[in-house]
Length: 414
Image (cartoon, rainbow, N blue to C red):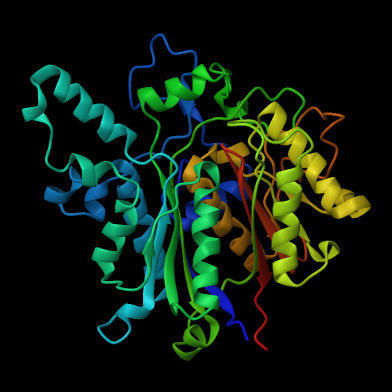
Protein backbone atom coordinates (compact mmCIF):
# COMPACT_ATOMS: atom_id res chain seq x y z
CA UNK A 1 0.00 0.00 0.00
CA UNK A 2 1.33 3.43 -0.95
CA UNK A 3 2.10 5.77 1.91
CA UNK A 4 0.19 9.05 2.18
CA UNK A 5 2.15 12.29 1.81
CA UNK A 6 1.28 15.74 3.15
CA UNK A 7 2.57 19.31 2.92
CA UNK A 8 3.77 20.57 6.30
CA UNK A 9 5.85 23.62 5.38
CA UNK A 10 5.86 26.30 2.69
CA UNK A 11 8.57 28.82 1.84
CA UNK A 12 7.94 31.38 -0.89
CA UNK A 13 10.00 34.25 -2.24
CA UNK A 14 9.30 36.14 -5.46
CA UNK A 15 8.44 39.59 -6.73
CA UNK A 16 5.15 39.39 -4.82
CA UNK A 17 6.91 39.09 -1.48
CA UNK A 18 9.84 37.78 0.54
CA UNK A 19 7.73 35.51 2.73
CA UNK A 20 4.85 33.10 2.32
CA UNK A 21 2.43 35.53 4.02
CA UNK A 22 3.47 38.49 1.85
CA UNK A 23 3.19 36.50 -1.36
CA UNK A 24 -0.20 35.02 -0.51
CA UNK A 25 -1.61 38.37 0.65
CA UNK A 26 -0.51 40.16 -2.52
CA UNK A 27 -1.83 37.40 -4.78
CA UNK A 28 -5.24 37.45 -3.10
CA UNK A 29 -5.30 41.23 -3.49
CA UNK A 30 -4.58 40.87 -7.26
CA UNK A 31 -1.56 43.14 -6.78
CA UNK A 32 1.03 42.88 -9.61
CA UNK A 33 4.73 43.04 -8.71
CA UNK A 34 6.13 43.97 -12.11
CA UNK A 35 8.22 47.04 -12.81
CA UNK A 36 11.36 48.41 -14.47
CA UNK A 37 14.42 46.18 -14.24
CA UNK A 38 16.95 47.53 -11.72
CA UNK A 39 19.47 44.68 -11.75
CA UNK A 40 21.28 45.90 -14.87
CA UNK A 41 21.24 48.70 -17.41
CA UNK A 42 18.50 47.89 -19.91
CA UNK A 43 19.47 50.53 -22.48
CA UNK A 44 19.10 48.97 -25.92
CA UNK A 45 16.98 46.07 -24.65
CA UNK A 46 13.54 45.67 -26.23
CA UNK A 47 12.26 44.42 -22.85
CA UNK A 48 12.93 46.51 -19.75
CA UNK A 49 10.49 45.07 -17.20
CA UNK A 50 10.47 42.08 -14.87
CA UNK A 51 9.18 40.89 -11.50
CA UNK A 52 12.24 41.31 -9.30
CA UNK A 53 12.61 40.25 -5.68
CA UNK A 54 12.94 43.55 -3.82
CA UNK A 55 15.02 44.33 -0.73
CA UNK A 56 16.36 40.82 -0.39
CA UNK A 57 19.39 40.48 1.89
CA UNK A 58 21.15 37.11 1.59
CA UNK A 59 23.08 37.91 4.76
CA UNK A 60 19.90 37.18 6.71
CA UNK A 61 20.34 33.54 5.73
CA UNK A 62 23.95 33.01 4.64
CA UNK A 63 27.32 33.90 6.18
CA UNK A 64 29.04 36.83 4.48
CA UNK A 65 32.04 34.78 3.34
CA UNK A 66 29.70 32.25 1.72
CA UNK A 67 27.44 34.65 -0.20
CA UNK A 68 29.77 35.09 -3.19
CA UNK A 69 30.20 31.34 -3.45
CA UNK A 70 26.56 31.06 -4.54
CA UNK A 71 24.52 32.47 -7.40
CA UNK A 72 21.36 34.33 -6.45
CA UNK A 73 19.18 31.32 -7.34
CA UNK A 74 20.91 29.45 -4.52
CA UNK A 75 20.38 32.43 -2.17
CA UNK A 76 16.66 32.24 -2.93
CA UNK A 77 16.56 28.47 -2.44
CA UNK A 78 18.27 28.72 0.95
CA UNK A 79 15.96 31.52 2.08
CA UNK A 80 12.77 29.72 0.99
CA UNK A 81 14.00 26.43 2.46
CA UNK A 82 14.67 28.14 5.78
CA UNK A 83 11.16 29.58 5.81
CA UNK A 84 9.66 26.20 4.91
CA UNK A 85 11.65 24.40 7.60
CA UNK A 86 10.75 26.99 10.24
CA UNK A 87 7.11 26.75 9.16
CA UNK A 88 7.07 22.96 9.35
CA UNK A 89 8.91 22.63 12.65
CA UNK A 90 10.73 19.62 11.22
CA UNK A 91 13.89 18.84 13.14
CA UNK A 92 16.70 16.90 11.46
CA UNK A 93 18.79 14.83 13.86
CA UNK A 94 21.44 12.15 13.56
CA UNK A 95 18.68 9.60 14.05
CA UNK A 96 16.47 10.75 11.17
CA UNK A 97 18.92 12.57 8.84
CA UNK A 98 19.19 9.67 6.39
CA UNK A 99 15.40 9.67 6.01
CA UNK A 100 15.15 13.36 5.08
CA UNK A 101 15.97 14.32 1.50
CA UNK A 102 16.42 17.45 -0.60
CA UNK A 103 15.15 17.77 -4.18
CA UNK A 104 15.47 21.32 -5.52
CA UNK A 105 15.85 22.18 -9.19
CA UNK A 106 16.43 25.19 -11.41
CA UNK A 107 15.61 25.69 -15.06
CA UNK A 108 18.71 27.75 -15.82
CA UNK A 109 21.00 27.81 -12.79
CA UNK A 110 23.61 30.48 -12.21
CA UNK A 111 23.32 32.76 -15.23
CA UNK A 112 24.44 35.76 -13.18
CA UNK A 113 27.60 34.04 -11.96
CA UNK A 114 28.37 32.71 -15.44
CA UNK A 115 28.13 36.22 -16.89
CA UNK A 116 30.23 37.70 -14.07
CA UNK A 117 33.00 35.14 -14.34
CA UNK A 118 33.04 35.30 -18.14
CA UNK A 119 33.59 39.06 -17.93
CA UNK A 120 36.47 38.50 -15.49
CA UNK A 121 37.96 35.95 -17.88
CA UNK A 122 37.76 38.31 -20.85
CA UNK A 123 39.27 41.16 -18.88
CA UNK A 124 42.00 39.29 -17.01
CA UNK A 125 42.41 35.80 -18.41
CA UNK A 126 41.75 32.40 -16.86
CA UNK A 127 43.64 33.29 -13.68
CA UNK A 128 40.82 35.66 -12.74
CA UNK A 129 38.15 32.95 -12.69
CA UNK A 130 36.92 32.25 -9.16
CA UNK A 131 37.59 28.76 -7.76
CA UNK A 132 33.97 28.88 -6.62
CA UNK A 133 32.63 29.57 -10.11
CA UNK A 134 31.41 26.04 -10.83
CA UNK A 135 29.75 25.27 -7.46
CA UNK A 136 28.19 28.75 -7.49
CA UNK A 137 26.55 28.20 -10.87
CA UNK A 138 25.56 24.55 -11.37
CA UNK A 139 21.93 23.59 -10.94
CA UNK A 140 22.28 20.95 -8.21
CA UNK A 141 24.06 23.23 -5.76
CA UNK A 142 20.75 24.68 -4.54
CA UNK A 143 19.90 21.19 -3.29
CA UNK A 144 23.49 20.68 -2.17
CA UNK A 145 23.66 23.86 -0.12
CA UNK A 146 20.28 23.22 1.48
CA UNK A 147 21.22 19.66 2.43
CA UNK A 148 24.47 20.90 3.97
CA UNK A 149 22.66 23.66 5.85
CA UNK A 150 20.14 21.34 7.48
CA UNK A 151 22.11 18.09 7.60
CA UNK A 152 19.66 16.21 5.39
CA UNK A 153 21.37 12.97 4.33
CA UNK A 154 18.55 11.27 2.45
CA UNK A 155 17.85 11.33 -1.30
CA UNK A 156 19.42 14.39 -2.91
CA UNK A 157 18.67 15.45 -6.47
CA UNK A 158 17.95 18.37 -8.77
CA UNK A 159 15.60 18.55 -11.73
CA UNK A 160 16.40 20.76 -14.71
CA UNK A 161 13.29 20.61 -16.86
CA UNK A 162 12.77 24.23 -17.88
CA UNK A 163 9.49 25.68 -16.58
CA UNK A 164 8.32 22.30 -15.26
CA UNK A 165 11.32 22.02 -12.91
CA UNK A 166 9.71 22.94 -9.60
CA UNK A 167 6.65 20.78 -10.19
CA UNK A 168 8.79 17.81 -11.25
CA UNK A 169 10.92 18.17 -8.11
CA UNK A 170 7.83 18.14 -5.89
CA UNK A 171 6.16 15.31 -7.79
CA UNK A 172 9.30 13.17 -7.73
CA UNK A 173 9.68 13.85 -4.01
CA UNK A 174 6.05 12.83 -3.44
CA UNK A 175 6.72 9.50 -5.13
CA UNK A 176 9.97 8.90 -3.21
CA UNK A 177 8.14 9.30 0.09
CA UNK A 178 5.11 7.36 -1.13
CA UNK A 179 7.23 4.31 -1.90
CA UNK A 180 9.22 4.52 1.34
CA UNK A 181 12.58 5.89 0.17
CA UNK A 182 12.33 8.84 2.59
CA UNK A 183 10.07 10.15 5.34
CA UNK A 184 10.40 13.85 4.48
CA UNK A 185 11.85 15.88 1.61
CA UNK A 186 12.65 19.59 1.22
CA UNK A 187 11.64 20.20 -2.39
CA UNK A 188 10.82 22.75 -5.07
CA UNK A 189 12.49 25.12 -7.51
CA UNK A 190 14.63 28.25 -7.58
CA UNK A 191 15.56 30.73 -10.30
CA UNK A 192 17.51 33.97 -10.65
CA UNK A 193 17.71 34.66 -14.37
CA UNK A 194 16.92 38.38 -14.51
CA UNK A 195 20.30 39.07 -16.08
CA UNK A 196 21.37 40.63 -19.40
CA UNK A 197 21.67 37.24 -21.11
CA UNK A 198 18.53 35.86 -19.48
CA UNK A 199 16.31 38.76 -20.47
CA UNK A 200 18.12 39.27 -23.78
CA UNK A 201 17.77 35.62 -24.71
CA UNK A 202 14.05 35.38 -24.02
CA UNK A 203 13.52 38.75 -25.74
CA UNK A 204 15.36 37.50 -28.82
CA UNK A 205 12.84 34.65 -28.97
CA UNK A 206 10.04 37.24 -28.78
CA UNK A 207 8.64 35.38 -25.80
CA UNK A 208 8.44 38.39 -23.47
CA UNK A 209 5.90 41.17 -23.15
CA UNK A 210 7.16 44.50 -24.46
CA UNK A 211 4.62 46.52 -22.48
CA UNK A 212 7.50 48.48 -20.94
CA UNK A 213 5.46 51.62 -20.29
CA UNK A 214 2.68 49.79 -18.47
CA UNK A 215 4.34 47.07 -16.38
CA UNK A 216 1.38 46.62 -14.01
CA UNK A 217 -0.67 45.32 -16.92
CA UNK A 218 2.06 43.52 -18.86
CA UNK A 219 1.32 39.99 -17.64
CA UNK A 220 -2.24 39.26 -18.71
CA UNK A 221 -2.86 35.53 -19.09
CA UNK A 222 -5.82 34.50 -21.22
CA UNK A 223 -6.57 38.14 -22.11
CA UNK A 224 -7.08 38.98 -25.78
CA UNK A 225 -4.28 41.59 -25.67
CA UNK A 226 -1.60 39.37 -24.12
CA UNK A 227 1.77 39.79 -25.81
CA UNK A 228 4.19 37.54 -23.94
CA UNK A 229 5.31 36.56 -20.46
CA UNK A 230 7.12 38.66 -17.88
CA UNK A 231 10.23 37.10 -16.40
CA UNK A 232 10.27 36.65 -12.62
CA UNK A 233 12.65 35.22 -10.03
CA UNK A 234 12.61 33.58 -6.62
CA UNK A 235 11.96 30.18 -5.09
CA UNK A 236 9.12 27.96 -3.93
CA UNK A 237 10.02 25.24 -1.44
CA UNK A 238 7.70 22.73 0.24
CA UNK A 239 8.26 20.28 3.06
CA UNK A 240 6.63 16.98 2.15
CA UNK A 241 6.22 14.30 4.83
CA UNK A 242 4.75 10.87 5.20
CA UNK A 243 1.47 11.45 6.99
CA UNK A 244 2.13 9.39 10.14
CA UNK A 245 5.57 10.97 10.48
CA UNK A 246 3.89 14.38 10.40
CA UNK A 247 1.09 13.41 12.77
CA UNK A 248 3.48 11.87 15.27
CA UNK A 249 5.21 15.20 15.81
CA UNK A 250 1.98 17.24 15.76
CA UNK A 251 2.82 19.03 12.53
CA UNK A 252 0.50 21.56 10.94
CA UNK A 253 -0.75 20.14 7.64
CA UNK A 254 -1.66 22.37 4.70
CA UNK A 255 -2.80 19.77 2.19
CA UNK A 256 -2.32 16.19 1.07
CA UNK A 257 -0.47 15.21 -2.09
CA UNK A 258 -2.87 13.24 -4.26
CA UNK A 259 -1.55 12.85 -7.80
CA UNK A 260 1.41 13.50 -10.08
CA UNK A 261 1.61 13.35 -13.85
CA UNK A 262 4.39 13.65 -16.40
CA UNK A 263 4.32 13.76 -20.20
CA UNK A 264 6.19 14.97 -23.25
CA UNK A 265 4.86 16.79 -26.30
CA UNK A 266 7.58 15.39 -28.61
CA UNK A 267 6.67 18.26 -30.91
CA UNK A 268 8.77 21.46 -30.83
CA UNK A 269 11.61 22.99 -28.82
CA UNK A 270 9.55 25.94 -27.54
CA UNK A 271 5.92 25.70 -28.69
CA UNK A 272 3.32 23.40 -27.11
CA UNK A 273 1.89 20.72 -29.37
CA UNK A 274 -0.71 22.21 -31.66
CA UNK A 275 -3.58 20.13 -30.30
CA UNK A 276 -2.54 20.44 -26.64
CA UNK A 277 -1.85 16.70 -26.59
CA UNK A 278 0.96 16.80 -23.99
CA UNK A 279 -1.05 19.03 -21.67
CA UNK A 280 -4.09 16.76 -22.00
CA UNK A 281 -2.11 13.66 -21.13
CA UNK A 282 -0.24 15.19 -18.19
CA UNK A 283 -3.47 16.35 -16.54
CA UNK A 284 -5.11 12.97 -17.13
CA UNK A 285 -2.05 11.22 -15.71
CA UNK A 286 -2.13 13.31 -12.53
CA UNK A 287 -5.87 12.84 -12.08
CA UNK A 288 -5.59 9.09 -12.68
CA UNK A 289 -2.72 8.89 -10.20
CA UNK A 290 -4.95 10.60 -7.62
CA UNK A 291 -7.59 7.94 -8.22
CA UNK A 292 -10.34 10.48 -8.88
CA UNK A 293 -12.56 11.59 -11.74
CA UNK A 294 -11.86 14.84 -13.64
CA UNK A 295 -15.13 16.31 -12.35
CA UNK A 296 -13.74 16.16 -8.80
CA UNK A 297 -11.15 18.88 -9.53
CA UNK A 298 -12.46 22.12 -7.99
CA UNK A 299 -9.70 24.57 -8.95
CA UNK A 300 -6.88 24.72 -11.50
CA UNK A 301 -3.77 26.85 -11.14
CA UNK A 302 -2.90 27.14 -14.81
CA UNK A 303 0.53 27.38 -16.36
CA UNK A 304 -1.02 30.52 -17.87
CA UNK A 305 2.07 32.32 -19.12
CA UNK A 306 0.42 35.22 -20.99
CA UNK A 307 1.77 34.01 -24.32
CA UNK A 308 -0.55 33.55 -27.28
CA UNK A 309 0.05 29.85 -27.85
CA UNK A 310 0.29 28.62 -24.26
CA UNK A 311 -2.94 30.21 -23.08
CA UNK A 312 -4.90 29.19 -26.16
CA UNK A 313 -3.68 25.58 -26.09
CA UNK A 314 -3.88 25.18 -22.31
CA UNK A 315 -7.50 26.31 -22.47
CA UNK A 316 -8.15 23.83 -25.29
CA UNK A 317 -6.46 21.04 -23.29
CA UNK A 318 -8.54 21.76 -20.19
CA UNK A 319 -11.68 21.43 -22.31
CA UNK A 320 -10.43 18.11 -23.67
CA UNK A 321 -9.83 16.72 -20.18
CA UNK A 322 -12.90 18.09 -18.39
CA UNK A 323 -15.49 18.28 -21.16
CA UNK A 324 -18.49 20.50 -20.46
CA UNK A 325 -17.52 20.76 -16.78
CA UNK A 326 -14.44 22.77 -17.82
CA UNK A 327 -16.67 25.84 -17.93
CA UNK A 328 -17.61 25.47 -14.26
CA UNK A 329 -14.06 24.96 -12.89
CA UNK A 330 -12.30 28.14 -11.75
CA UNK A 331 -8.93 28.44 -13.53
CA UNK A 332 -6.45 31.15 -12.62
CA UNK A 333 -2.90 32.17 -13.42
CA UNK A 334 -0.95 33.74 -10.58
CA UNK A 335 1.78 34.57 -13.12
CA UNK A 336 -0.40 37.59 -13.88
CA UNK A 337 0.97 39.11 -10.66
CA UNK A 338 4.42 37.62 -10.04
CA UNK A 339 5.52 36.96 -13.59
CA UNK A 340 6.92 33.65 -14.79
CA UNK A 341 9.56 32.25 -12.44
CA UNK A 342 10.74 29.67 -14.99
CA UNK A 343 12.20 26.74 -13.04
CA UNK A 344 10.80 28.10 -9.77
CA UNK A 345 7.27 28.58 -11.11
CA UNK A 346 6.02 25.08 -10.31
CA UNK A 347 7.41 25.27 -6.78
CA UNK A 348 5.73 28.58 -6.00
CA UNK A 349 2.49 27.49 -7.65
CA UNK A 350 2.44 24.23 -5.69
CA UNK A 351 2.66 26.39 -2.57
CA UNK A 352 -0.22 28.45 -3.95
CA UNK A 353 -2.56 25.47 -4.37
CA UNK A 354 -1.65 24.19 -0.90
CA UNK A 355 -2.60 27.60 0.53
CA UNK A 356 -5.75 27.69 -1.61
CA UNK A 357 -6.81 24.34 -0.16
CA UNK A 358 -6.05 25.41 3.39
CA UNK A 359 -7.83 28.77 3.16
CA UNK A 360 -10.55 27.64 0.71
CA UNK A 361 -9.99 30.50 -1.68
CA UNK A 362 -9.04 30.63 -5.37
CA UNK A 363 -6.53 33.38 -6.19
CA UNK A 364 -7.39 35.58 -9.17
CA UNK A 365 -6.05 36.18 -12.64
CA UNK A 366 -5.11 39.86 -12.66
CA UNK A 367 -5.35 42.06 -15.77
CA UNK A 368 -8.12 40.01 -17.34
CA UNK A 369 -9.91 42.74 -19.28
CA UNK A 370 -10.75 41.56 -22.80
CA UNK A 371 -12.12 38.10 -23.42
CA UNK A 372 -10.51 36.00 -26.13
CA UNK A 373 -12.95 33.72 -28.01
CA UNK A 374 -10.34 30.96 -27.81
CA UNK A 375 -9.89 31.45 -24.06
CA UNK A 376 -13.43 31.23 -22.73
CA UNK A 377 -13.20 29.56 -19.32
CA UNK A 378 -13.75 30.98 -15.83
CA UNK A 379 -10.37 32.58 -15.12
CA UNK A 380 -11.34 34.07 -11.72
CA UNK A 381 -10.91 37.57 -13.16
CA UNK A 382 -9.25 40.22 -11.02
CA UNK A 383 -10.69 39.19 -7.65
CA UNK A 384 -10.02 36.23 -5.35
CA UNK A 385 -12.95 33.90 -4.78
CA UNK A 386 -13.90 32.17 -1.54
CA UNK A 387 -15.17 28.74 -2.47
CA UNK A 388 -15.06 25.10 -1.39
CA UNK A 389 -11.98 23.36 -2.80
CA UNK A 390 -11.38 19.67 -2.15
CA UNK A 391 -9.02 18.89 -5.04
CA UNK A 392 -6.75 21.38 -6.81
CA UNK A 393 -4.60 20.89 -9.90
CA UNK A 394 -1.45 22.80 -10.89
CA UNK A 395 -0.04 22.71 -14.43
CA UNK A 396 3.57 23.30 -15.50
CA UNK A 397 4.79 23.09 -19.11
CA UNK A 398 8.41 23.56 -20.20
CA UNK A 399 10.49 24.14 -23.32
CA UNK A 400 11.28 20.90 -25.07
CA UNK A 401 7.73 19.75 -24.39
CA UNK A 402 8.32 18.57 -20.81
CA UNK A 403 5.14 18.69 -18.72
CA UNK A 404 4.19 18.18 -15.08
CA UNK A 405 0.91 18.30 -13.19
CA UNK A 406 0.26 18.05 -9.48
CA UNK A 407 -3.00 17.28 -7.71
CA UNK A 408 -3.43 18.15 -4.04
CA UNK A 409 -6.33 17.38 -1.76
CA UNK A 410 -7.77 19.30 1.16
CA UNK A 411 -6.42 17.67 4.31
CA UNK A 412 -9.03 15.73 6.23
CA UNK A 413 -8.02 14.35 9.63
CA UNK A 414 -9.51 10.90 9.28
